[in-house]
Image 1: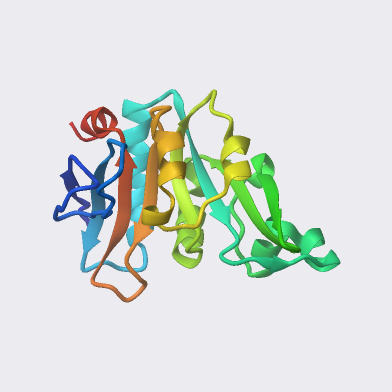
Image 2 (image 1 turned 135 degrees about the vertical axis):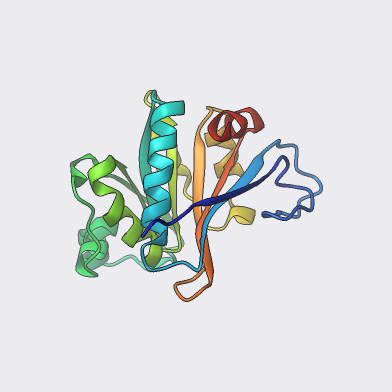
Length: 209
């Protein structure tokens, strides 16, 4: 069965549009948005879209690497067990593993006696299905395409919240380096689920043409 990926786009994330809007009248950023979705989607929708995007990015941005970025959804108590497990151990304890995770990088942010962990993993085509599974279950997550020279640890040191409207500085850092940001939208039982793209207008234009 062939599953078609539908694409809709808008030139400005910060003005009302039919794709996705962040209400931030004072924003000094110029970002475009596109939605990649499968209508009447199945449990394989995110995987289908990731495969579609992987091919696009390989063709249009061969100098970029794909990363999955994951963060703790809430502050964790600063205990010996939490420090031992870190984010990678907590994910594995829940059965969430990604093939070829030897490139995993991780950083802890401390505040008021609590911890939040942020991690990043570079991945390739054989890992697309397991990355899709993790995206389905982890809200505080992004997939990004970054230039090979990009310092991923700078993002982990900064952290993020996992919501576009709250992560504008995070989006700005990536987009200014011609990076591509993707965020999962839609829940498991939604009729339409997919991935949002956010990035500079010329980056989106090149991706979609």
